[in-house]
Image (cartoon, rainbow, N blue to C red):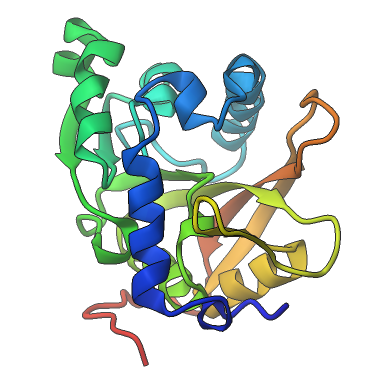
Length: 242
């Protein structure tokens, strides 16, 4: 099946159906992970290992500010980003999840570490210009059409500080086909399509790492460390669909 989600259903219904699905999901770790809450610790450990590698590399990003995209109740914010960064911003379209995040993170962490919270869908979100050292995007890009996927990543490029990186952590299909989940209105893309979309967003992958120790039967999960292409350093403003 082609990657163009308009072949599945029209764009408006694609987004609306996804929003409706998540509105009925409980604001718990198990809810955020689709019933697989038991893999959270393994997931976080794999992500921490990657972040340490990023920080030990040449021209590494700073640790001042990070952005958690599709933050849910703040699982990644709490256990991955807050320990590494001075401040963390969260963007999440489900207001109930963000409300629960206050309790989940705890009053001290919430007041000391969280800077801004954006209650909006990623297709409408635009990061502050040159604010972030790391933009973390995990298990949420399947809810964007291919066009919005590229537009969103282009906007994220503008949100990076010098030496900043975008980290994408996503399920990958084992075939070269797009898997469509009608239940939650999302897609899982093959590695070849993800790489093509990164190229369209003028990003290059500086590191590709597979998440290990996940249970058998789940999709393979890969982490991509993305940087703006050196030949294209100009910021992209007023991005719209062609």
